[in-house]
Length: 100
Image (cartoon, rainbow, N blue to C red):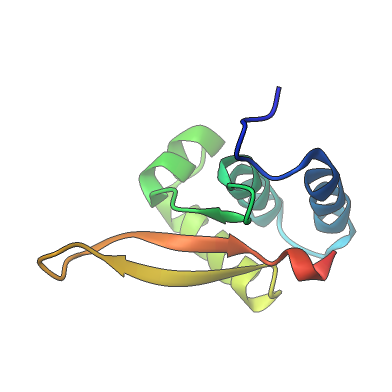
């Protein structure tokens, strides 16, 4: 059952179809699917790298490479977020739903 504020089933189905049509690494596809799983109805999520690595069963370096691959393919965009003291916290990742 999808979360109340998650991507719609229709958008998620299109995202899954899109990702498997891309020439991407298995890691990039896995990370993309995890980000889609975490995304709200606006396609935004803030998963931390460690959580992505743990949930996908891959290393932090693999998460970083996969994220770069997804950014290069314009499937996601990333915006840094900072706390009150200026320290970088989890990035805001947006699934570029305009691609599908």
